[in-house]
Amino acid sequence: MLELEGVVKHYSGPGGEVVRAVDGISLSIRAGEIVALHGPSGSGKSTLLMLAAALMKPDAGRMRFEGVDLTLMSANVTADYQREQIGFIYQSFHLMAEVPAVENAAIKLLANRVPLKQARRAAVPWLERVGLGKRLDHTPDRLSGGERQRVAIARALISEPRLILADEPTGSLDTRRGGEILALLADICDQQKAAMLLVTHDSQATAIADRVYAMRDGKLALGEMDSGPPEPLRQRVPG
Image 1 (spheres, rainbow, N blue to C red):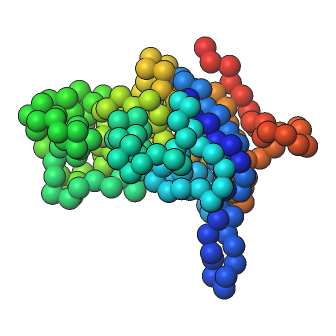
Image 2 (tube, rainbow, N blue to C red):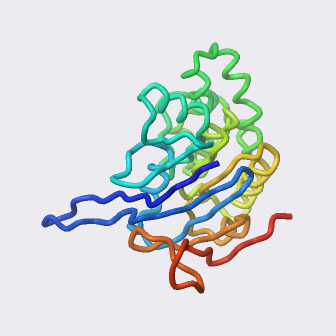
């Protein structure tokens, strides 16, 4: 479903230093598969998610979603891809202030010109699934950090995306609630055959993944092989 081939993204750092955020990564993710990335801050994990979401363009390499080259899409097609195919769970939530949870969760539907009443109705079961059925009309300032995280997760999932890009989705959740959210994400990938690229430091999250990679200095860690495509540090056989 998602194919990255020799993807490179570099930045200019302090003093003209070149920061190799993503340095020649090749990776494929199949429908229904969960791939987890972990590694130290600054290793390029979030940049890789942004590239996969077509929120930035690589300096080199190819990125394909279901065979379509993301780097060659027009602005309108890119917007459609982000709105209809991608569910991006941001680490920093990005909720709209003074907007109730039910409408924050429905933003993607509203952007697709779904009427407000219909969009709100569609958002309710998703908020219930993340444990916020009694917080529908609460604005972000009336929600805890963990509750805001769950609104952001409902917002990402409401359009039933084909590709879920999750940046520390359990970072603001306690162990029990984090486990429930991870089970929900795993169920969605299994039932809807969605692919998920998951950035995490949570051992619960890596446990649901089919493959787990370490990322450091813009590269995926190799396994036992010295060369060739990166090998996962661990692989779980689904089922």
